[in-house]
Every structure is written in structure tokens, then in C-alpha cells.
Amino acid sequence: MKKIFLDTNIIVDLIADRRPFSKYAIEIFKRAEENEIELFTSSHSISTTYYLLKKYLDDAILRKVLFDLFDYIITVIAVDSDIIKKGLLSNHRDFEDAVQIFCASKIENIDCIVTRNIKEFKKSIILVLSPEELVF
Image 1 (cartoon, one colour):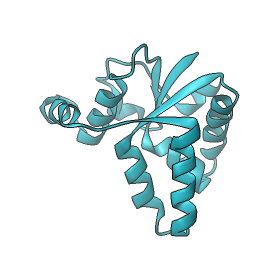
Image 2 (tube, one colour):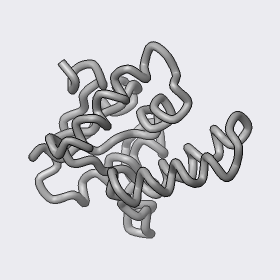
Image 3 (cartoon, helix red, strand yellow):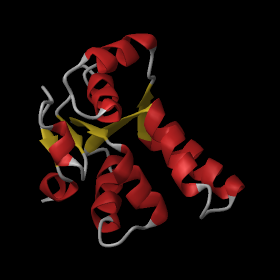
Image 4 (cartoon, one colour):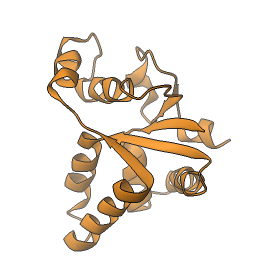
């Protein structure tokens, strides 16, 4: 089974139903529910998703959605001090994206990172795909 690390924007696309991007996020999560792929994200992505969406969604509903995602569908990789240090010392332009890359690198046999922000992941040692590339 393929192991896929999701960047924050894919999770936000799903929960906020940001069209046209949500159609790819929906398909990715559907494949995970059908055990075709295994999904991962960072603890940073969960907290950032909450922060971004709390203005638009009821707090209790948003918390339940996020809890259900990481309790049943997606494995959360903790952002620890080692990851923070690697991100700060890296030559990646964007610190947050560096954190995502180093979280993904903690997953044994990771296949790819999926993001809509591919240009910021150019220096990734892990294959980076757009949601469209993963789905089709």
C-alpha cells in the first residue's frame, strides 16, 4: 500500500470544500478509506487547519472532524525538536514546508508528499506530487 504524506492545504481543501481543489482531496481520502493508500500528516498541519478554519466553521464540528480524521483515516507525525532543528538549519526557502518534508522523512518507505504548493518543495528528497497527479 502506498504511503502518502499530505500537506496542510489538502486537508483544508477537504474540510472547507474549497472548489475545484476539494474534488481531489475527496478522492484521496476515499482511497484511504478503501485501504488503497495510507495517509500521514504532521501535527503542525492539524493545528494549522484548525487555526485557518475556526473562523468559518462551528468549533465543536471542526474539532470533531479533525479528531475523526486523525483517529480513523490519517496518521499524525509529531513535530518534535529534531524536526524543528532540521527545518531551521535546512536550505529550504519556506520553514513550514521544511518541517513538512522532515516529518514525511520520518515515515518508513514513504512514497510521496502531496501538496498544491509544489514550487516550495523543490528541494525535497521525497517525491512531491500535486493532488491531480496522485489521483490520475
